[in-house]
Length: 326
Image (cartoon, rainbow, N blue to C red; front, side, top):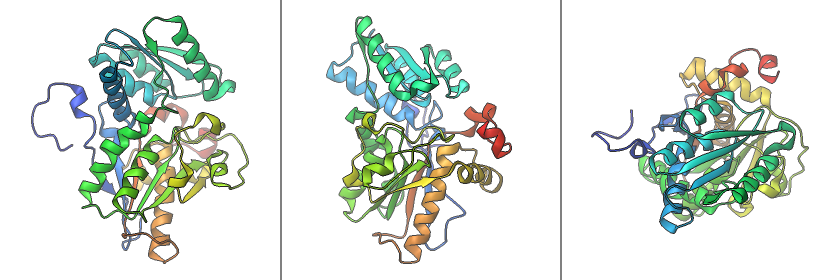
């Protein structure tokens, strides 16, 4: 169910125009709306940057047809790039830390990409280093580097945000989104602030992540299970602009796990952990606006549900909390 009503030439034509759906647990006075990005062909929000970044890179001559894109990724970006690469005559190699979803890695391979694993202990920094090493070894290879490439945020400025604002007649009070690369939040925040300078912007991260330190808040580094958002090394996250963010909110894994299950059982939303974290924070922001504790230009909050829980079933997302943590 998208806005598409006629036959399309390519799967890339189905990227974007995803539904915007109310979160039922939000206060009636300040509704929360979530962009359901699992409706993209690769089933996540990263399809947007896969298509947008590769098309722009081909147009700009950064990569040529027949060349190779090499990207360090937790999985969804790889799938998004693989979907686009297969249709745009580009080869794809993805460097993925071992701890991330096996389902995602299987899908990348199914789409014709090569997947190379790096040790979990090396984190995304290790994957980034390995990707650049490979690019030096292969002719015609480039690393788009979603963590620092402005095209990442630009994709959401050009597609995600306008879709939201069109759907809500530009009456958006607050934007809430998790930060992995920070591309989604930055693109939407820049668009939102251009539409209304008082748009309230909130970054979401798991407890144990360090984005909060970029806003001058003390944060204790720790492991977390929530996937797709958060960082242990802020030096690799070059897109995050503290000036565009009013606050950074941390969500404990346990709360995220509970909300992931609630969204499924009560709202029929089969979404993953980052969406659950976004949902919790968006609801709190909505209550704060309702209660006069947060100023926003309109009584509405927008967030994103980046992908589906189906890619994490092997990790026990719908089992006991201890099973998921294990």
